[in-house]
Amino acid sequence: MKHRALLVAVALLLPGGAAMAQSGPWGPGADDAAFAQMLKTSFKGRGVATLDRLNQDETQVFCSDPETVYAPESAARREEIEKVNLASVKWPADGVWLGDWKEGEKIAQSGRGNTWTDKPEQVNGGNCYNCHQISAEEISHGTIGPSLHNYGKLRGTDDAVMKATWAKIYNSKSNNACSNMPRAGHMGILSEEQMKHLMALLLDPRSPVNQ
Amino acid sequence: MHQASTGIAAFLAAVAAVTVAHAQMDNPQAGIEAYREALQDGNPAELHEMAGEELWTTPAGPKNASLEQCDLGLGPGVVKGAYARLPRYFADTDRVQDLESRLLTCMETLQGKDPKVYIDASFTAPPKEEMNALVAYLSGQSRDVAVTVTPEHPKERAMYELGKRLFFFQGGPYDFSCATCHGQEGTRIRMQDLPYIPGHEGAAAGWTSWPAYRVSNGQMWSMQWRLNDCFRQQRFPEPIYASDATIALSTYIAANSNGAVMKTPGIKR
Amino acid sequence: MGKPMKIRAASKDGVTEIKVLMNHEMETGQRKDASGATIPAWFINQVTAKLGDRTVLQAQWGPSISKNPFLAFRIKGGKAGDTVTVTWVDNTGDTRTDEATVT
Picture 1 (cartoon, rainbow over the protein chains, first blue to last red):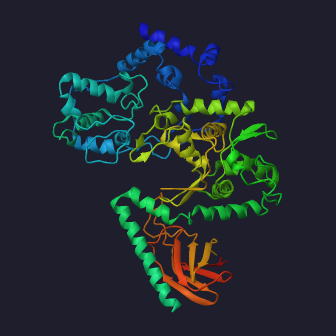
Picture 2 (spheres, chains in turn blue, cyan, red; picture 1 turned 90 degrees about the vertical axis):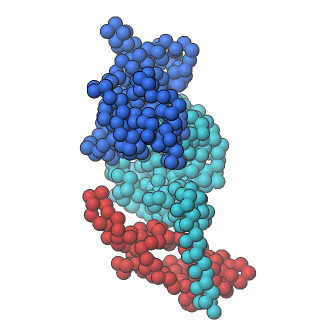
Picture 3 (tube, rainbow over the protein chains, first blue to last red; picture 1 turned 120 degrees about the horizontal axis):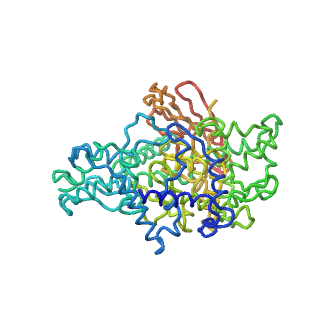
């Protein structure tokens, strides 16, 4: 609770803080007021992609400043962000970690959902192959994230691995403040059931990932 | 005699087409490369250039005027090399403008047209087809010209900085910014290589190859359309056509690519 | 009336190479629009090329040809200054004729 109060205070300081605008990496003409004005006049809500998507949470605020993100003096702040994100993780209600890896593969393949051309009833995909190698059979994979081939085989399947993997999928910022990976559970992109299927794709010994 | 040899040539052309199709099935990238090569002097963007030139020179709008006196930055009516120097500051509007926002200004002042019609139309609707054709024509007039975008005016520098800040600005349900995909070197989404925009080489790869004809859907995409679709995939709300955010980003990319040679209009998968 | 074609024709050593870029949607009749309705077939089915007034190419096309077709072919004969005329007709009866001068 004390934790949360501190973060709110920090979040309040960030927008509109004149000192922040000067000490930040942004040059003349790109201070907070000018930037906010530009966003306000340049975007419109369309379909599911409403204007409130431009309202950043504290993680997004922190991660939008490349100069300070990995600066040594930001270490404490990074840890702070990771703690807040870890605290948001909801563990599987029934204590079961793994679903069906075949369903997981479909979710990993799909990049659908949440754009202004997607309908609200669209079942979201996980976008996983866009950035990760996963099953070796799928050669069309991105390289922004690390390879997940042999994920379970290399790490085993004890409870600590299950927990860490679940936390990573549910909220990727829980162990890396400015990870490029979306926060699938925290942001409501994937359901608990879908995340269990992805867990199975990575950790089920029968999954092609571990063959 | 003529007929006979033509028949053989046509047959050979058909064989070539089938070979391309086969290559495409085996390796999509190789197929696209072969198609690109075949189109080297037949980029369908040329059809849009022709249409754009006609739009540029034909009187239209309530004032029944052509766009030929439009000042794209090098003086009224100068089109050669003008695109390679955009975005830039224009004193008459007191704004930094990219090609598309500048065209809207000219359509309003010279032709008496309502820019809102062009801004609000979807990218596949007739008003945007006009814009895309004009962009194809005018970018073609800067083919082989070096990009000269060096923010000097205070408003140009502000636009560059705003574009840089927007490039790193995360938002939406996926926490994406432009930098999520274009902020590391040597990465790709699926099989698609991603240019590293903060660097000269990556910025040049992007900036000098758009606008472009997209083979996969037969559409002529302007830079505004390209940026619009990036934001769509970023899960952001929609950027308004020719808005400051889009011009700021273009200024950032163009200035990072300063000195690179324009290959516009390009051809893409 | 269809949209203009782009035609290039160049003669070298008694052979003329003709390249034609046609502006056409080339709908197969098998695609559906966003609402699920079939988009009607609309494609070029006849192409004729002439050098002067002599027909040098006749082709029958179908819906498998791509949007904005590109056609390149070589003929014996032809010289700088000759006129090349290309005509297409599509399945709706629409037609377009353009010409270019051999260089």
